[in-house]
Image 1 (spheres, rainbow, N blue to C red):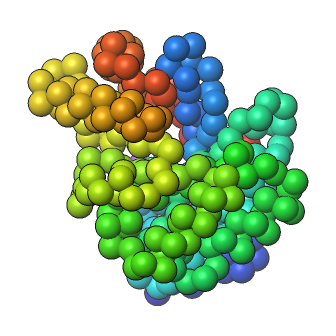
Image 2 (image 1 turned 30 degrees about the vertical axis):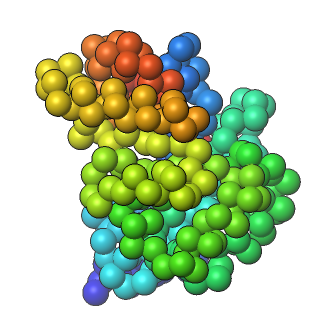
Image 3 (image 1 turned 120 degrees about the vertical axis):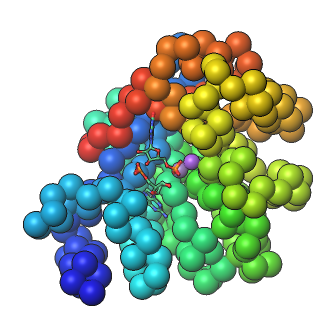
Length: 244
Ligand code: G
Ligand code: G
Ligand code: MN
Ligand code: NA
């Protein structure tokens, strides 16, 4: 309860919540093409907290919704900031919780934030987990399609975990698939993980969907992913999440 109260305060006063950014690189030259925005919370007593420590609480209490809009706004502001982009038209990928979809707010929030910072829609990507989309209502799916129509790219996050459904790739305007790090971590030692990643990459190539491998930590993983034809990557080897 104490934690929920301070989370509410952090949100209300726009203090304590900090967006971090992790580069997503083109694997042909390791140059960042975009950044994933990842929330951190500077708690007055507990110090810097990872989302794993407070997002479940935010989900349960419903705070995840206002919190998600706050993060969307902060991320659009950062996408327009040359400290992050170096003046290049790099994009920012924002995670959306399933709770933010289907409430009739998503399209208006995005339009408002793009407008506020004079940002082209192509500079924003929205990451949604497979599980959130599998569970989504028709209204939620419609909103995601409207967002894609604006020119915002939709990324399917944590791909391969949870309740995967290939029909999502067929029916939704997905531009990017993010291959979960549970497949990337063992890629050099586990033949099945490797076969799955190879198949996902081939499938995405056929569908003209970009693949991002998550959680790349070693040079061997990077070499292996390049050989499999993965075009983009993210992970501690390539760059850690950091504040603006
Ligand atoms: O940042 P970390 O490195 O610890 O993130 C842990 C989890 O929290 C990931 O699954 C990530 O997608 C999620 N996460 C991070 N920032 C946000 C956010 O702003 N909104 C939502 N909904 N999830 C986030
Ligand atoms: O679920 P989502 O993919 O949005 O979350 C990304 C999460 O992965 C964040 O918690 C981020 O801090 C974490 N992350 C990013 N790169 C690495 C990595 O190379 N190794 C590990 N273990 N975690 C990573
Ligand atoms: Mn993500
Ligand atoms: Na992910």
